[in-house]
Image 1 (cartoon, helix red, strand yellow):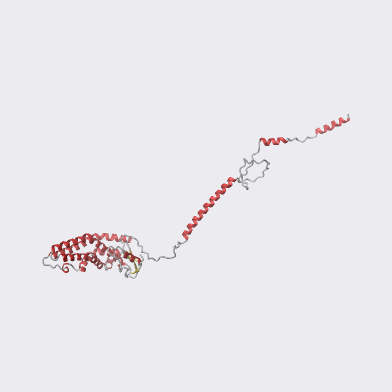
Image 2 (image 1 turned 60 degrees about the vertical axis):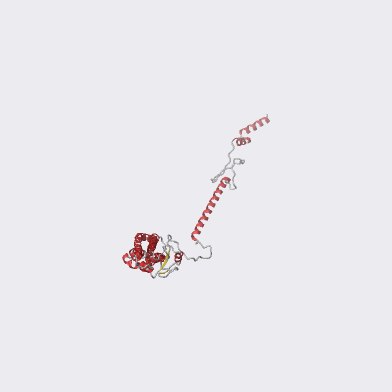
Length: 347
């Protein structure tokens, strides 16, 4: 049969040709459901490679939040916080260093437009006063003993005169001349006074002690005699005179008053007067050793007694050697107990 034969031939021809591969549409979906691909996470510093991206549905639950530049927001926030701390620390450090630099480079300005013109008391190395203390301490006990012997001689002379039956009891007959009596004290203390004055002069001049004995002692004996009169003998004379006037013919009562007067002088007054005398000798020795063409200043011992007059002299500043200070003195002592010194202004 021609029609069947033709159909059979067409069928055979068709079966010999290659057939297209049949791909199941559901197979791809099944693979996605079974093993989904993990979403790609962009690292902080990604390596640039060519990657064939596979379209997939975003998974917001598994992907960390990112900022517009693609970096995780948490990392970005921590970096910002770190830079903020660094900037704050740097700002504080710069401010502190700037303040210190300004404090060093900018001179302090007075808070008030009025400049104080009050004089300033000169300062002195305390070693000067320490040297004086050591010098005087070395001879002070000997000086007190010498002065007590002279005082005892004066007491015995008065008692011997009053005890005589035919002697006059007038003050002029009983008491010695003040100047002559004070000179006996100064002469008795001459060697110790010379030692003190020489040691004082050597703090200013680098000369031998033998060469300074005469110059350093200049004015010392006269000054010591004046102190002894004003601080010791005048009071003794006044009390003895009062005893003579009170007990006109009672010689025993007069002798009793004399003994009491001299005993008080030995125990309460003599050591203090001798100490002042020693300090005067030291101050005079320093003064005479200063350059007569230079300037000197009055300095106050911080450990000495307070005195407004001494402070006035110190506040006067440097004056020419030989000129009087405001209180009238050329050098200490300005008063009993004064422990000041006059030294070269450039010392």
